[in-house]
Image (cartoon, rainbow, N blue to C red):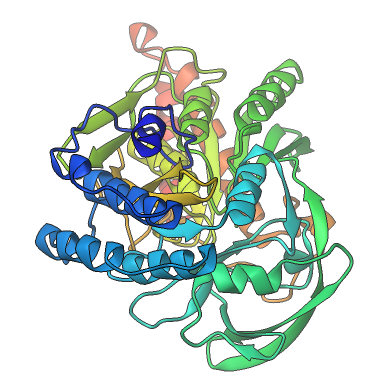
Length: 444
């Protein structure tokens, strides 16, 4: 069968490694499908049965088996009916990240992870409890970002069409469109609702930007901002660090604010740029298969590090943040992160459509499951009350950056003082200086 051939292929992966070698059992042999539409439905069913990780504890295999019989007993006259049936079937899973994508949507998602996309620049999720469409984060320097859209904003309507009961796929269809056209979003932030009219654009994403900042006391700080963990992010980060090392920076501020995530392997590679040894992340599949990723002994720098995070730092951003915090490699500054601790794999279906399915959860090096709770920064700092300009992000006018830079200066000072103290020579004056300064640190 065509489906069996496809299941043996190497899958295109989003957010996850693929867990192979898990047997389907005899149920895969049982049904002879009446048409190609049922073949797509069964393909989705098989993937969920085999690989889906249930984070809610509500998934029952017996019920899922009954659903297969129910949906394959129906007749489908066209692909639209079959696709609606797939979405209906998936709605029985209490998981907003496991979702079906029609061929065009699936192709667009693959393009998105390759480094460019078309739209307004937001990533959304469906909250199963409230039934709200929630923005994970706007992507920097896109129409949504420039219009002031924020992480955790709720979309109430799209072009005056209510989103109540609307699934993600239908929302995406309404938001995306021809380049240069406009879309009107009704946004709920807290208790206040308002409208934003955004122009659709083709957006080429350069995932990493960097520069050298000079502090008031003439220290050189390497500033690296990662906007998204796409296929190019690791190489771009490597190039940025190597360039900053030649400029003799004293430490780094890594900015992951409003970064909605991306590819798991990208987050692991970028963590290894800063972490030489130690656990980076562990993934746990539904069958209890635990895969642990560690530093590979090839870190690009060991200089002091501060990471900026906020409510829009999600998924892959939280993997990097958690690895740096738990390994005591650096300090986190900003606000508690989004809290997406689930891993999705992107699967190609028999007709060119696709499925993103939750296949694992991830744990930080300390074994913490951060799903829905997020990562609490070491130093909590709110963003500016008055919005700052795009060019002011990562400067002293940026309140969170300013706090991060101050903390980095303190770390650099402390490390320099420790290097001056030599126990073999009983350099007591250096030790006294360290003790004196430490009193100041504790008050900061």
